[in-house]
Length: 139
Image (cartoon, rainbow, N blue to C red; front, side):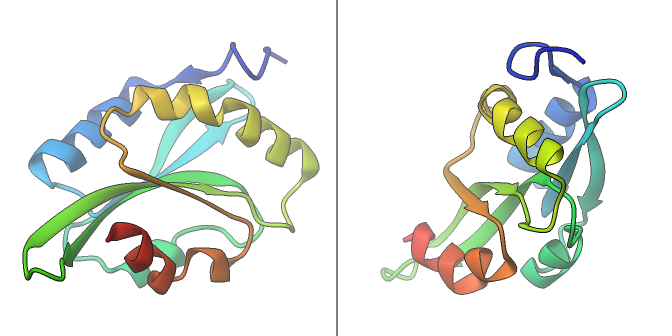
């Protein structure tokens, strides 16, 4: 096994799709998966711009770790339309210990590849990434 903290490769598609989300707003969210056999982070799912936060949370597996980004649109107290790009480290309590360790040790390196993340959330349970929490972190 490659050294998790330094040997984790990031597939170019991850950066490309993130740039599309950030610059062109082609995607509402992206779910990333570590391919353990190849020690590489890959794109698992792209959410179309019409998809909702609920669609996003439903696309995260209940028993497996994932990274994800979500483009959250909101209105400020001053009635301005804004958006923020959230990075999620999804590590459910029910996932394998080895998987949790792999995702935890690779997170910072992977996140640095995605220039433009504004908010980070770590969640082990759906309640830790409810829409209310996302809204509170936006303002």
